Length: 148
Image (cartoon, rainbow, N blue to C red):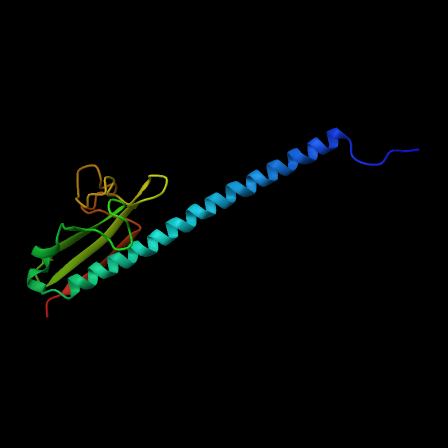
């Protein structure tokens, strides 16, 4: 009579393969959750940039540079201390303002997205990775504002 079934060794090997496969799937799942969170925050940050830009567009051209250049703001949708926005305006042309609005934020893993590494909204030495004279971020909007 021949015995049918699995040996203990075969069961242990099968369990090991299953554990490795499930571990890989769990790692992929956690990475996808992180990507989803970053995508959500990027969407919120871009919306905050758009809101600030609309606020600047609704202001008077003659006072926009003095009022907004080099200022920072707390973007809506983030908890205090988790994100900071920055406004930079180039007024080299007296009839045309180049306006740059960006938002940098901190991820769950404590990594800062954007050049404002300390999230204070102030352009400081060492933060401008690409030396263009302003704080950049994946959540940034640039526009021109002409004098009417």
